[in-house]
Image (cartoon, rainbow, N blue to C red; front, side):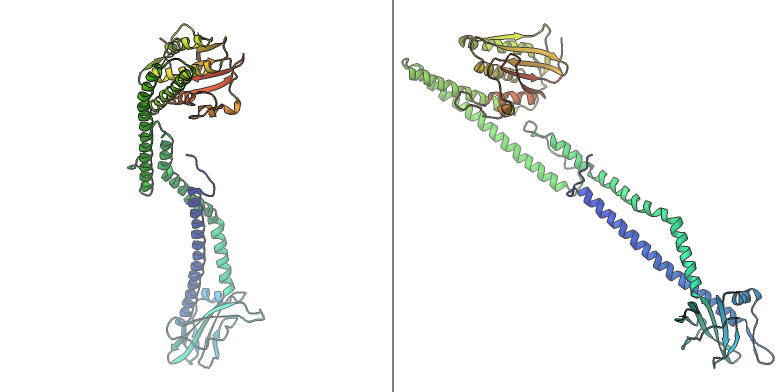
Length: 462
């Protein structure tokens, strides 16, 4: 399936939208992760401070002399009295006097300390920069009637450093997943969209086969996605209307031509009963021209109504010989001659003999009309590598290069002052299209025009 990546491409719009959505989703997810990570780590940090304050509170007791004593394990004590002053604690009485403290004392407790086992979390730093950013917890302790305040503090900078280290480690080890997380959904989206568009491509290919010769073909409506079923139905309805219009046009052409033949025949009979004079000869010529046009119109209608060309067999040699025999008397009356060139073996193809006869007859008639008296129109039957061909060569003026496509148009004539219907070569083109062949125009080597009917290579050689 070929996909157009221009600005109007629906696939391009879908993929751009999905890419932007994926980027937005990843950005929101990363932002949420950072916020959640910060919040969770902060909660864990505060929970650790609360736990240490509780451990200190549980380790307080009164000596026999009434002094406050801290029975803290040495391992925990080393954590508070270690170098750097990263962890601190203090035990104060109601007046704020320090009863017990680590090597480096804590700061002032908050003005309001909530009751309960969790206490109050606080943070502070001074503007001088000598005191690092500190986080602490203060909780009230009732020790045998004495009201004390336990404070535990830890450097917030250490906490921030741990967070940075964790984030760097996370993105260092997991950053490689960012591109797959972005491009994997995008790749899946491309495959899904392409697969979804496959029925559209099949419909397009089928629609390309619908021609005036195959107006009975319709796009399947039961095998398409529901979203485009109304469009397919509308297209089929349009094809129905076009087919009906073509049928009416063909019926009208055939009917009109058929109805005109009888009046022309009556007119010719009346003309024959008149005495001979120049006017009668001129009228006879006009009637003959009109009869020729009517015959050509009937042939066009008949050929356009045909949809199959492979029913039956056509012997191209026999057809060419029949055309030469049919038009030989006309050539003799005009002082011209017709020659048939062919080899000994017959060439039989799948096709309809009668339309092929009309095509070859039109080419030979056209050649006789343009070749000068005393010259020969040559019909050549040959077996080419790509298929059989019938060539008609004359010695007339030839066909100008700029006219070689127009000559096959209906009713087209280079010189309107000459006789002719402008349908002969159009019929030739219709017949060759029906048989899957082509018709070519070239300059003959000795001067004149060379028309060649090229049939597909489905011939049978007995």
